[in-house]
Length: 128
Image (cartoon, rainbow, N blue to C red; front, side):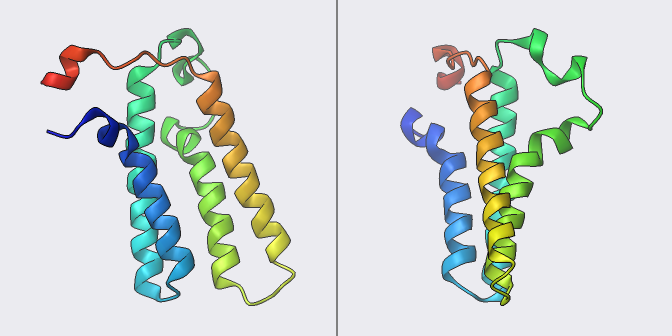
């Protein structure tokens, strides 16, 4: 069983490790591995966030035209797309667009994180 601190940090570790693999190692396999780690971290974050939501009246099921999975993956798609543009492009005129995508993805993610009211994980769920 993992300690609570380690358990709570896992999605962030997955995402940051994927970003580091994509940006530091220029190899194709590193880019694919980084994408897989980012997707895994995003999915874990989304599942935990959706499970802990205390504001079900503002949840996605009552509004929106995008499918749930696309809506939830949106900030990660923007940020990862910007990172891929930055990493794989040799044209310096693409860099501002890549930076804008990264900033938009981070902004959407931070806004969602701050607007959702999460319930603290209960002690009963941690011991199971």
